[in-house]
Amino acid sequence: MILTKEQQAILDGAQGETLAKVMKTLVMYGDAFEAEKLVPITSKHNHLVTSFGLKVMSPVYDLMQKLLDADVCSEQTFSVDPRPLDKNVPANALQNLVFNKFMYTKQDFYEDQLKRLGLMDQNAFTCTCYMDEVGNKPKKGDVLSWAESSAVVYANSVLGARCNRNSGIIDIMGSIVGYVPYFGLLTDEGRKATWVVKIQTTKKPEAQLLGSAIGMKVMEDVPYVVGLDTWLGNELNDAACAYLKDFGAATASNGAVGLYHIEGLTPEAVELGESLIAEGAKEYVIDDEELQRVKDSYPVIWKNPDAAPKLCFVGCPHLSLEQLKTWTVNVENELKKNGKKKVTVKTVFTAAPAVLQAFEKTEYAARLKATGVITSYICPLMYMNNPLCKKMPVITSSNKLRTYTSARYDTDEEILKTITGGKNK
Image (cartoon, helix red, strand yellow):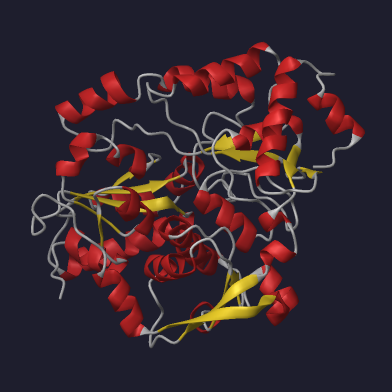
């Protein structure tokens, strides 16, 4: 890797041993991917993935303390993934004991470290940091040092920023020195599509299901999706962005997609069109039968596969303000149709703290509360990582949550019927 004089000086220790180690880490990371150089980070804020104070993560706390002691805090302020705990989310006494006494015993300590390192504000805990309410939305062409797979794929695809799928800790390293290795999705060549995915469904495909199908097929490659604009239109409005948020999260977690292009919709696809498709790109056709095949392939790993659901999570990644409003109306209508006043399954809708604050200022907040649905800033995945949760029949419309936990995937429509006392086919 060729370094500038300034970068080489940092590596040689001109600004201290700790910063030299940070630079060495990034250089080694870049060398592993044959990066030719380091390039400046241009985004205003960073995003970190490591938000949870697990007792076993003592090396992380030690590292953060060394950075603080050496006064080499991030040059950027940053947001971070959601908190793992919320007393308002249903949990029995034994689960709470495990959460508070065995798992997340370092949460307060770690959050204090994050604040001193450069946390944007006390509520900057969300996987959807790019929401307007949160205030960490990069511009097209910005170079990032983010981690969190669903945030990275959204920034690359919907916003047109440039970021590789970094791991935790690498994100803060790049932010501290202000550079990241130049390879992969930072390059023009790395952003070309090696798959053309043709959508031939007879109705709008479920975002999380479609994303899952594509992710499992293309894995870490870049897909160019044709035909989805039929259902989403050609404007990146609130509805389209919410759909692509959920779609992208599934491509990233069920595969390893860091960037997708949607013909006629996402910025680079609009600007460059089919020139984004690499020579020799493979083809994948998705119709109704293919989506059903993918859904039928998901295992149900509950102790009793036929058990009645006891808990439902919606919002992984976190819901947008418009999604909260839409879900409120849909739950109300379905309850009325089924002759119910409150949901029949304990249900939690999750969103960024700032989004929830904005939601509370609308008429919808009181209406949703009246249905019995709980709103929370929690990370459902971190909640489900409690080993006792494996015994619980939990349902979700998140393919990410399904992939990483014992939760069962149901479509939004199926979720809606289940939690309101209706019957699924």
